Length: 151
Ligand SMILES: [Cu+2]
Image (cartoon, rainbow, N blue to C red; front, side, top):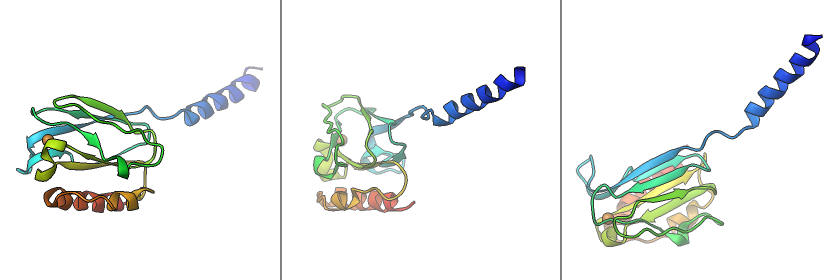
């Protein structure tokens, strides 16, 4: 008698566990005057791939930085975000795609980054590639885009 009920119950529990979404993770990106590679004015890491639904926290480890989404490059339907100077900002990446970011005070010094939510080549990558930054930022951004294109 026990087995008649236990088996479907066990199956139901397994199914529920498989269907439950994985716990969303939080990832940290530091805003630094000097990166661990010796480069000045960086998001570290400047490229990051996360799961859709994860959060990313931009930490003002050094003073004088902020983070802005580069809105013209965001995935369709993604929420724009804009941090104040020295503000810690947490963003939920609920839409799959690439999220370009910049630090306004240091845009001329190369302080940009790219976060990809989801697997594969992001659907909005052409939009991201169309963004034009000052040279130092553009050079770093192109390197980040190459990482976004890698599986
Ligand atoms: Cu900065």
